[in-house]
Image (cartoon, rainbow, N blue to C red; front, side):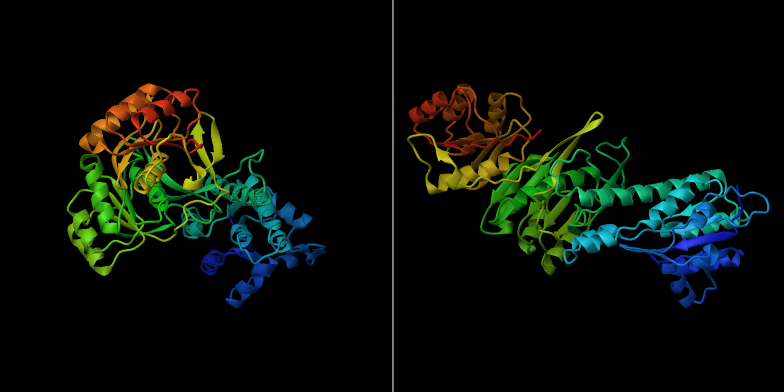
Length: 507
């Protein structure tokens, strides 16, 4: 190992660098700064050398702009092995990279401006130093400045192998992340590129995962314009858990599917009660009554602000999370006093997904990647397949139930009446069994309700079960070999059946 005597400093993020360099100089470390950094440090009163004084050369100029730091002598100084009597090398390299992600997301820049913003020198310097980590201490993250100073003081300026290797690992993380950001910018126009490059940074450690014996953390895709937690503001309650975040991800998307005041309650990743009404308070009451037992401990999402009436009702019951566009002052006071543990979240981003984002699911050793299922079927693209046509009220319930069904794990069967779910069943391999469960959940409310199925009803047994239970209309994608037979059954019963022509499996 090598005692730190000379440092090369080249930073874009100047946070903490002045204090860090002062601490180094107090240890008799010589500071050599790159062209973009030397002026800043001198303005702050630090006595530093410019890199051109060391390499004896001014910046090289190419057609794409200046190459300020790269030079054969500098490369040699980064690769030195600390030979006795040799004081020409660097023992410490402090480099952080130009903020390419931030620049590339600016809509006011031309492509040429973004290309000029790509940092050529920084990653090269970091890689060269990190490869030689036993002799060159490399620092790529301003957050570790205090820890580096502490380590230097504790080791008389010569940190041990483990500390050096850890910092080198961080440096290679930084360069890998940077190259991924650049590569993703170049491949942005490709829908399904040959190489799918994604970079994630840890935002928070979670108390545990789905179960207490599982460790967990929340990661954010680097370069994403928004993520689940950036889209909300927590106004009160406990920390969000792994399961809270998973259910919130579903709940906010279900609520955003509706333009009229609506409420959804999600439990274990699936809606248990959904309702639309004249206002948010009424919508919550109806969604909660749709399945009170299953709603216990669930996640509530509304697409309208919460008022005092809704807050009082919500506070009377046990829920984990409440998500809404906003809260009036009285509602916030009521929730803080009567439901202090409830995680109260305000929406800060109405959009949930952009068309270019992909749905990715882990499998053993790989990923399944697909377009998100964002399309919402509108009535004008649906076909009535039976002699009987739905009334206007029935149309409303059919479309409502079908929109809910796409968020229920397949096979999904949803019963709805007056824009309220009265029975929801999912995960059954048999649609007949799933429908039986939904009907049992609905009880007497099944009579006159609409039935939605996320995929075609391929056998007449489920349709006969629905008709015998008093179901007054059915909506499904269609496409079964037995469509004619099922349509005939509905005609004989005098109920309408609508085909959407689009399946919504959710596994």
